[in-house]
Length: 271
Image (cartoon, rainbow, N blue to C red; front, top):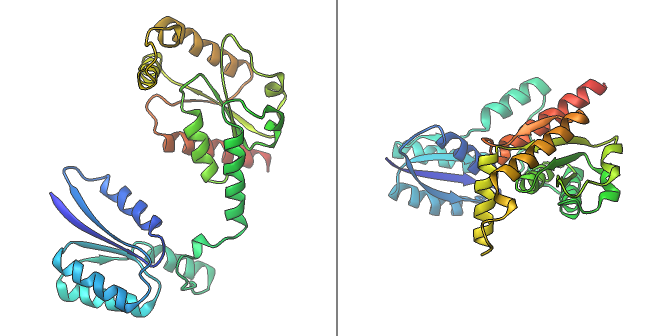
């Protein structure tokens, strides 16, 4: 089933895209034809968009704070017989009631260059500089340290967490090369072990070697050698009481969510 999906935002539209993506994931056999309209901040701009909507009728989802522009969109959609939904309205209304104040009608306010923004940039820079065991002297400054065998999703998970504001270091667990002693002396970071199934790891490593035009038959992809690697890493995690997450069937987002939950639980225990 083909569906025209019109996404209108008075800012970057990132929030709206994520909402639409999450909702569409719940339906099968749908071919969404996305019409993305960011930075809608004038009636003249909206008028041009409405012409496109009339030519390609479908579902209209919007995050617009200007009352006049909202009213114009809603009125025209009703006239066209099209559903128009503002997914953040109920949340804003609930917050308004609980906090006893009106929401600020400012487009893109969540993207303001506040302290949290700069903290996130700092976290990303830190994480990039402490990838794959680099910069171990600064590990104590990390919020999170990820350990795991090669190709266990340490780097992409680290970057994802950095975008959420966490300073993350990561280190590969290699049987032939013990990690720096510093790893076992850390106090501040939450150390998390990442593991996966041997079959999945061999498959990922083979694909990696092929993409690099390297010989696919080495200990790096030998089933028994990989199993020994994983067992070695698991023993290290268990010996030091680190929480372990199996990433075999988890997406990066799911792994990161589990790690954030561990961080939150740790913070609660400290209070």
